Length: 169
Image 1: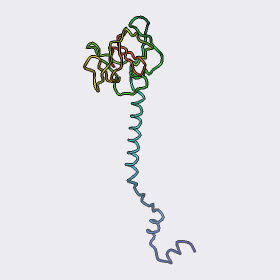
Image 2 (image 1 turned 90 degrees about the vertical axis):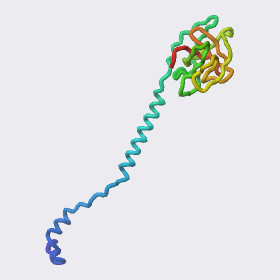
Image 3 (image 1 turned 45 degrees about the horizontal axis):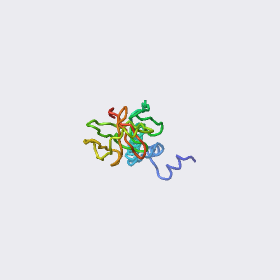
Image 4 (image 1 turned 30 degrees about the vertical axis):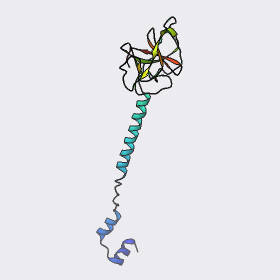
C-alpha cells in the first residue's frame, strides 16, 4: 500500500487537489505598521544628526590676537573661549555687540589680560537687540565697564576684559 492508494480509498480525492496541496504556499501577511514606523525612525535619525551637526559646526570669529602693551592698549591672554565670538563661558545664538560713539563693535571673543584704567569710557546699559545708543550692549549686564584700546573696545565681564572690534560676525 502506498499513499496514493490510501488517499483514493479514503475519500476518492481528486488528483488536482493533491497536486494543489503539495504546491501550496501560504500568503504572507503584509505588516502595514512596519513601513510607517521605519520611516518615522529614519526621519528622527536624520533630524538628530542635523541638530547635532549644526551645534558642532557652529561658526565663530577666529582668534587673531596681536596685542601689545602701553597706554590705552591691552595685552592678550590665552584663556577664554574664542571659538564662538562670545564671552568666556557663555553660549549664545548671536554675536555680542556694543555701540560706542555711533560705531557698532562686535565681540571677537579674545580675552585681554588687562586694560589701562585711563582707557575706560563708562559703563554699559542693556538691550535685547542690536544696540542703538552709545554704551548700550546686548550681552553684558548693566553697569559693565568698557574702554577704548588699540584695535577696538574692551568690555569687562565677570572680571575679564573682552575685545570688541568693528569687524562684524
